[in-house]
Length: 521
Image 1 (cartoon, rainbow, N blue to C red):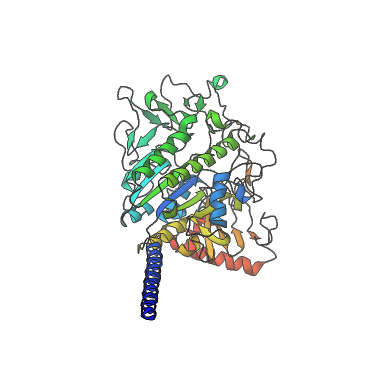
Image 2 (cartoon, rainbow, N blue to C red):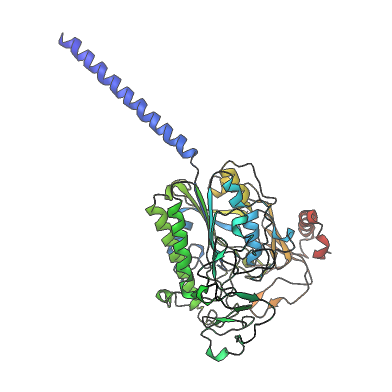
């Protein structure tokens, strides 16, 4: 009898253990299934003029960027990540559309009064994601044009971000150094007083309005070149502006203003998939750090605003953490083009640089066809999904469109965008084979480890900003595997490689019918 009871007890315990084991296995399987079917939030953090060497994880030793480093060291840090262009508007156009900017004749550095660069019928990342159930928002710098070419800044401004896929927008129209110096929320100028209407003109000043030329001695930030039109907050700008005093931004508060709007957006959308394009204004000129960041870098305003931008990124991460979203958010960090020091103002960027190298050992910078013009910090981070690694695979911001589309199971693709989803997620190391790069209407070419710059007329150095543009009467060919600084031109000693590069370059560019503009020999 005792033996029978013991046997039955043992069998019951065994059955319970088996059931628990099976239940636990089912739970784990469900977790795995749920994880694979997760629709992540997507946040693109896009810096403005941040160089390849401006981030600690990319070699900056004297400039503290702990929050950018956290993303770079905890995700995929790309060492061959590219903006499409060495200037801002073209890169932003390419990022959102997945299309080479040189395919659009209007994709140049835009004035503050330019019409919308993206056609409202053109597919964009936010439109694609909206079609998959995402709420979409942009906070920060826009610089892709507004309206149809004749904007009344005192009425709702359209078309703009809201007409090309964004459900919510809180932007500046162009850049911090261009008028209008106001914030625009969902098409409406913030805090505008109808009794003090805004007028904007990029050709002629308004009667009675003084400029940076007349008031040079009273400016709190003196201009070096180009920035000598209307004065706002003691800083001369590009373009002329009259009125709108109650709506004008306070430059030192700009980073905080955009950060708060980005945080508010995340909190509002925390319960459903969202896409946030957080377009920082730093370290573009004029560099106006909040007083609490002045002196934080020891490099003057340029270094200080990079520290400020890094802090903003840290605060954004804290918001994602507090909302319980870090495990379900893909963060992409990059920059619209390479670095520049003196870009129109005297602000000690050159004098206080010290041993810091914004280009990180690359040649050129903003406006340049050399590597530093377009090779930028490029990081993907997704806590618990992406494992930390460094990748030398070539990838462009143009590829974000198709890669994100594949991630959310959309069949849409950008015209020049490649599906590199597994590369973004750190699951493979195969990237692009080739890439056309652009700088102020000129184009260059990357293929494998090789870089080609065709002959271009014009000055080889932009003396205003002290950056080599890449112009030369002869072809330039570089093997980046052994000459990352592009010091040895191999065009004459590697004729077969040169010809191969030229032919492939022409093949890609020839699709637009614009090859003759390159004057290839």
